[in-house]
Image (cartoon, rainbow, N blue to C red; front, side):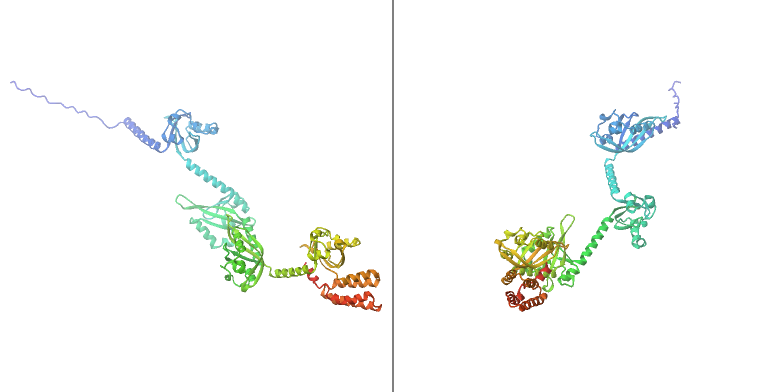
Length: 602
């Protein structure tokens, strides 16, 4: 039977593959994964850091944009060039640079802060690691440099280092633990206190503090504040190795860690011992001045800020509040107060100009006071006046005495012949009475010698006269002087040496009065008679002329005249006797000016 052919059954072969990775496959997969991860890491590093590949001979294989931007080059400008192109010439040829590459060739990494030179010749600082790349046998094949630009930070660090170095040179620097023990101290600190570092290291700060202060609550609180991170600044007294006082202007600065917690204290201090001693000396001087003088402080507008007891007492005030806040013009007469001179007085003080003079002031209840005063502007650091200090001495009594003496001198000048001489006898000045008596004008005698008025016969006696004056001995007697055109002039004169502060004569002043006609007549009679008695009695007359200038000696002089008159009466009424009678009444009023007062004043 023929029918459709029968289909043969399909045979399906199933092949099963073992997909379980073998050891070789797993090894290569791991290597691929690691390589991929490393490539990702390298890409990340290249984004943030400057990366360079270098041959072991130092030639540049490649460099990323970060590196090129830092140094200002393009890749073409550096590829194939030696790394030394980024190094200063002196370093390039140095042994240290050769050793740098020798270590890299030995497989030793190098990490540090390096100074490099960019394309413009400027300094660039990088913090870099040079890492040798090793083959499977551990042999270096190339070098990878990973760098970061730290130029700004380096400049800042160098600036800080310079500042610290400058501080170290100029100030005393000490480092402390928080318990106050000394970690280290510089030379300035040690020299100021007289110690060596080994003598203070590990010792407490209290070593330099007086026992009373050391045991006080204030000193404990000082260190407690530092432990809380609070800086302290003060003027401190410290005790040196020999017990000497040393003064510091110091700051104590807590140093914090990354979390801000203090872990040590650094003190920067300036030795102000000299300034402190000088200030103490000045304060002592000011205190001494305050005890001896009247002292007032004024604002630049003239208002009274403060006044010491001497000033208040001088002006008659009991309390400072009576003058405090008031204007200086309260001590000035009304007429002066509104004057241009008074306004200029304060204008000068405001310009920083001191004023010194004798001033008339008006105290409480109109009391007139004279002071010798200096007004001294106090300047700030810029030289601008900030206040005025007046130092004054009450000279009222001396001023009154001076005015009285000036009055006496003026009276003498009006009534007597007055002339002043150098010690060599040359004429400095002469008043109108003197010039009239001698018949000269001032220009004819000034600078000439007193000898022009002396007779030629005086000789040695005249020289001795000036020798005594140069020794400081006053001379008072009758003198015959020669005026202009040979005119004879008889004067009763006091020649008085004027002494300096050391008691040494520096000039001579004469106060003189021309003798009356009666005395001159008597002298001529004595010369003609040549009698011994007449000469003796003339001495009496001369003494009387000299002594009547002194009130206490007047009675005695009159008595001597009377005795001379009686003696001559026994010998008969001579011309001389009659002259004595005539002079007896007249001498009581002769030379009435007070020579004693003049001498005392001079």
